[in-house]
Amino acid sequence: MISFPGTLATSISVAAATLFGSSNALSIGFPNVFDSLNAITFGSSDIAPFDSCPIDIPISCTNSTPIENSCCFESPGGIMLQTQFWDYYPPIGPNDTFTLHGLWPDNCDGTYEQFCDDSLNIKNVTDIILDEFKDENLYKKLQNIWKNFNGRDEDLWLHEYNKHGTCIKTLRPNCYSDKNYIKNENVYDFFNISVNLYEKYPTFEFLAEAGIVPSLDQTYTRDEIDKALSSKFGGNKVYFKCNKYQALQEIWYFHHVRGSVKQENFQQIPSMMNTNCPAEGIKFIPKNGFRPPPGTPPKPNPPGLGKGYIKLSGKSGCLISNGQWYQYGTCAGFQVLESTFGGYNLKSSKGYCGLNSDNQIVCHSGISPAKFQFQLNKETKQIGYGGKFDWCFDSEHKHGSGRFVQVPIKLGSKDCEDSIKLTFQA
Image (cartoon, rainbow, N blue to C red; front, side, top):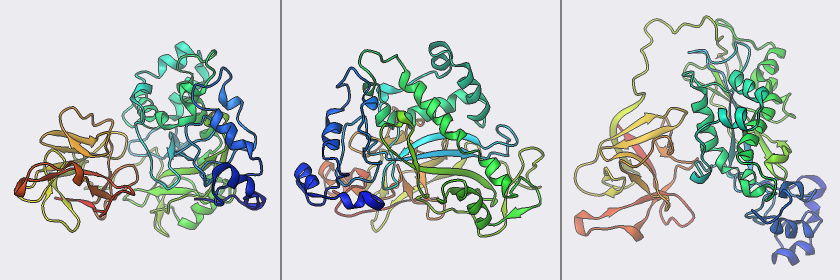
């Protein structure tokens, strides 16, 4: 939990204990605030709830008392990331611009949800912005700054909304006026808000002001980049990431949010991650004129780690093709493949793998690789999902007997008795 700064921290009071039944509950000096939040729930008013949110509502991730099902408080995704990419090979977007990649709602502990509500998924962005909302200006901005590496920009827009936009709780349709909500208004708002926040952080200009410009010869230090970015972000550290060539590639700006995301009251906070860039020798490669070094092998098609087995830490056996643990017999072959928009797909002879409603790993022909993106620690080869790398046995649902017992593997939680790691071994 992140505590309130300054005078707000002094308002832990008897009023909070009265409201929440605990002396550890956090009040902000207005005992009716949380009561108001509880009243402003999904679909409860003809007035748009975010227009009725209390002025002194807590900033996301700063309260110790859960606020659930509220259109005024973003939870569990209380960390909002504004992400930008610098893609130079192939070159993507203008030569003097970091492109917009997305607006991501992370949980307060750094984990994240994805593809949260299939009922909110969309199949077309262009029609919504141009035909339904007649916003040519926003559409031109999307075309210019929200770019896909293969030229199919709309595919990226759809992916970002379906994966991340559906997880922003305060932008759900039920949080709009019951009488005045326009179909897909929440979708339009997601893209408009994403662009607005992106435009607040012209990363290329931030770096150029500090003398950090693209070059095939010049290199920069981690401290130089850190200072150039943090000085423009309220003194807060900004996350930046390098690729395997020690070249700058991604920038992430971290925020809390006060009230609904619709209100765009984003609060700058320090990065929750440490950069992977080296202390010195960081390249900022120009988009125009770059050529890979002679002898650079082409990327495999499809890119990934090829075939191997998935082993469990401290346990014999491995995962079999349905995604469950089997202690004896032959290990199943799995493929770890880079997914189109980041992350990795797992695939066995049964089909692609994903998580079911019980957070168990399942692999079969009905799994869509576009919906389930795993993570891979490239050093340890450990497999994660949604920011979590801990897994556990779901022994309650094991089946078979003796040497033929199969045990489902589920994403780690507080209920796990023993935490395990899943490691890919080629």
